[in-house]
Length: 139
Image (cartoon, rainbow, N blue to C red; front, side, top):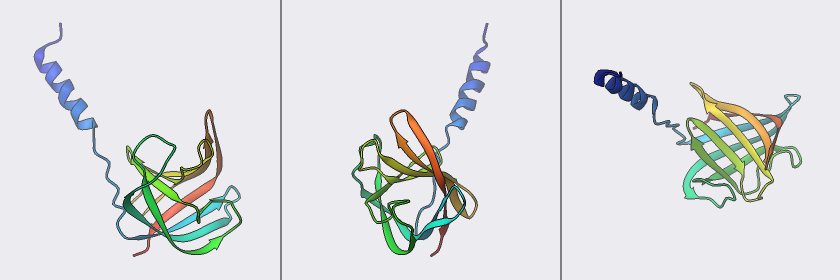
């Protein structure tokens, strides 16, 4: 038999595990995207807006505003295309969301002074790593 106090403790423990993940995206950020050989392919200034973005993906997506582009190597990452972002459970995902089933996503977690993770091509049933990325707050 489970005692009422055990149920209460379990309920409190479960409630404390549901933490709201907040990433402070204010200001201007420097975005760097690298290929699998760790060569820099994209370097640009970006800002995270509160404006809704168009997306084929479910969820709430907001527009990423791209400022100055210092480096862009071909079509490796579509930095000049409309880009969107979302945050789910402490993970920032940003990229091209308007080309259905041809998504290009940067997805990673916040660290003390930056956000970093993988760059992937994602479609129904598949995901291929193309490189890595890092976001550093610049202003």
